[in-house]
Image 1: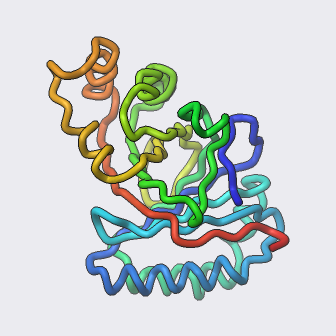
Image 2: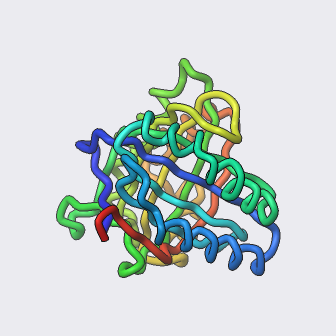
Length: 231
């Protein structure tokens, strides 16, 4: 199963697809499963498919050996004349985000391992933030090292911050937060905390996150399928 680690030197790609109906999400998931199960691209390491929960859509968390390997995939006949047209028919938004792992934190119960797998029951949250290039590192710190207090938050399992490198579907610099929770209830309870219920550290983080991003969006997911090279 795929693992997330700051020690990884490979490229992490997040393909985020939005759609407007649950029926189209089902079609998206079926198409993604077919692509993942037949993947044999040079440099491809793994793909993990996520089904949207709060809003219809999908996320594919993909690990590649390098950006050069990914660009060969993007330049291929299949990608441009079959994959993109197919997804274009059933999506309202396509964002292909290339990243590197900048920070990873886990609850002690995970024994230092962040695993993404349909065999787990993680309630996964993916937040994407636009940011001015000169503020990107500050935002990474605000989302990552400055949130050590999450370890004391009920239901928290892990979170990973990804430094955006380049993208198709969005302009400018960006940062991604990928977090795992016990369930929707614990995540919603964390989000519902008012300022007077937050610790001083939480309040400082909230103040930074109110000013650093130029835009943000989020969706929640369940992992439904994964496959790695050689399987």
